[in-house]
Image 1 (tube, rainbow, N blue to C red):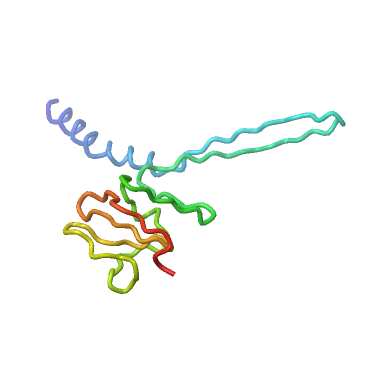
Image 2 (cartoon, rainbow, N blue to C red; image 1 turned 135 degrees about the horizontal axis):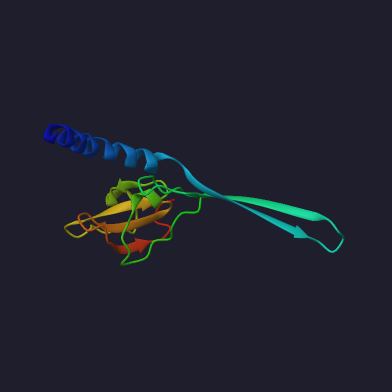
Length: 129
């Protein structure tokens, strides 16, 4: 009997992460329907579907609306437009970055970011044309 119980416990421990990951992978959404009656007697039906994103998915940028960076924020390259590390020699108005920092392009802005911390030290707007 002990062998049977131990094998059942072992099977449960092996299969439980698979069941949880399948539940997380399934799209989770909720549909809301709103019915309104106007003064002229017409009926307006609005259906809205809200889908909950998984915490493992990349955030999506809607309608090319990117972030405006500010000093002291944490830089996240997923929200940057045209992200790449730039060489300060190629652009006028950029000084040599201090040790532990580098310039990053986000749209037409040059952002001075700490390499290890990701904190923004300065934002030079319109530095890249």
